[in-house]
Amino acid sequence: MESVSDYIKQLMKGQNFKGNNFNEGFKMIIGEIKKDPEIKRFLKEHQSDLADNAVERSAAKLYEYVNVKHQVAENKRSFAPGYLPQLVVNDHLIDVSYAASPRVIAKQKAEALSRRVTTISMPKDIRDATIDQVDTPDDNPSRLNIVNLALDFMNNLAAHKQEFFPGLYIYGPFGVGKTFLIGAIANELAKRDIQTTLVHFPSLAVEMKSAINTNSVNDKIDVIKKSPVLMIDDIGADAMSSWIRDEVLGVILEYRMQQQLPTFFTSNFSMAQLEQEHLRINNRGDDEPLKAKRIMERVRFLSREVEMTGENRRPK
Image 1 (cartoon, rainbow, N blue to C red):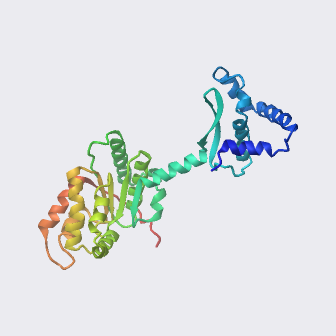
Image 2: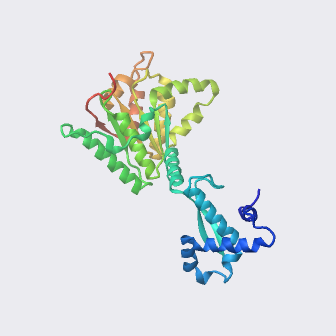
Image 3: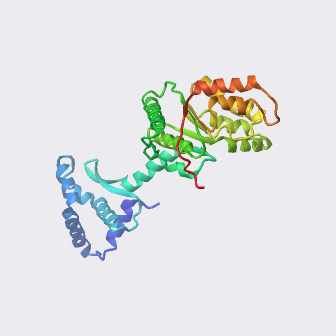
């Protein structure tokens, strides 16, 4: 691949500066280069660091700098799209380095944030959810309480990442914003360099049953159970089988309890209802109170119960 310096030298030779006119053309280019205000400022600031003939010896680099800068200013495609040229001193001569433009930096930051939030069968609108979008009306102080609890959790975890802080078990009616809230928490944690996995549990249950045929159940469970922060959405909305309860949910929660990893839940059931009305009776109608109690011990260790009320915001 042709180097940038060689490319610029060829560009200079292509400006009709040939034969006896080349030296004259070269001097003309150097004169134009020296008029550039940013180059003038750079030469003044680094006068003591540069060789006496640094401008002449660095002509190709300076020409490169000026041309690429003009291309960027005119929204033309340069050889390094999205990157801006910068002058630097290299062995008493002038060189050019490239730094990401503000647009590229913003894109990189957005991509980095996105990578810190993994969603499994979750609605797309939570990708842009923010805490300040959560309604906290004066006539519903419980919602403000939930937001404050969420903020306390995020601040504590960000300041003491090696300590264990229980998540929240958020329960309430359909459409009050439980899923939106955990999405907002996940996005805020991403800004603080904390990775979160959000899982829609009924969809996960279906996926796990399909994974039996490909022998990939353990791999899928490992990815979920080891997430620094896990959010299990809509637990209790599926027809719970003993296998899903014990070999999927139970394994995930056992690992997270042993490793003391923060875990959030959303549900239409309170903790007591989840145990008695959902986990205790499997999809065949069998009553298994001890197994339900075992799951709930882990849920209670990993999270703190809080009720979320409000208007149903889902389209009717």
